[in-house]
Length: 202
Image (cartoon, rainbow, N blue to C red; front, top):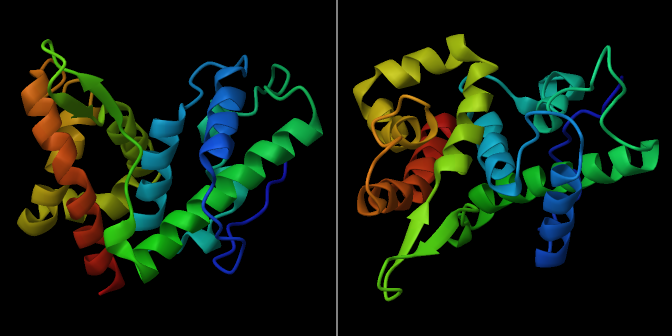
C-alpha cells in the first residue's frame, strides 16, 4: 500500500482541538492492535523528526505511517473502513507532523507536547504524565536504532533522553514511579526536545 512522503513544504496549519479529537477518536475506533493514541502519536512524530542523520522527507511514507495504526493488517484486512477514512487519517497526521517541525524551526518556545494531566489526591495539584508520549517517541527510535545509539551513549544527549527512557520503556526507571517523580520527568521533556532539535540542526 502506497503512502505519501513527508513534504517539508506541505500544509503546516496546526490541528485545531476539534481536529486533534477527531484524529484521536478515529485512531481509537480502528480494529487493529497497537494503534497509537494522540499522545503517543505526538511523541512518535517528534522522534521521527529528531532522528539523527536522517531527513524524514527521504523516508517512504509506508516505512513509518502504518506504525501509527499497528500496520496495514496484512494478511488481515486493512484497519480502515474505506480509502477516504485512511486518507483523512494520513492528511491529519502529516499536518500535525509539519506543524511540529514548523514550531521548532520558527517559534520553539511556543511548542508544547501533548501530555496527560491528572489531579493529585487532594485535587489541588495537577500532575503531568508523559508515559504514552515517551512510548511513542521510543517507537520512532526503534525504526532507526543504529542512528539513535550514539545519542543514547553520549553523555550530553543521553541526559536529555533520560526522562523519555525512564517513562516510556516497560522496564524504565519510572514505570512504577510516584506521581511526583513522573511529573518531574515529564516536565523536563519539552526543553530536552528543543535542545535535541538544536543539536540536530547543528
